[in-house]
Length: 139
Image (cartoon, rainbow, N blue to C red; front, top):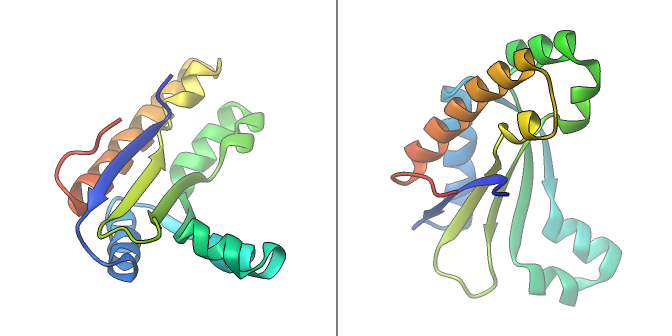
């Protein structure tokens, strides 16, 4: 089961991160969390682990209106919120990669028809955001 939408971006990591946040905003998402996994690894596991990981950020993207509708319909769907978006660049790589969770996974996990409709809307918005970064997303 495919669970992500992916694009490769031929830009430096920090520029890809900046553009990803802007693209999410233009698609109606706010970034409500930002985990710098490289820094977390450096602190908790040591610099060699951070260096091995490369640049790696996990963004929590949320469209409050869609989240509210989904939670009204099925309160436990909060387990799948917010939509995670990963911006990463492997050590030594020339390009960055952006992955977003495919919200349609919610309907594959047995969520009701109202949540499936909301997930479809979120999927379209995330695909539009990633398409804005670099052509058509895969996945």
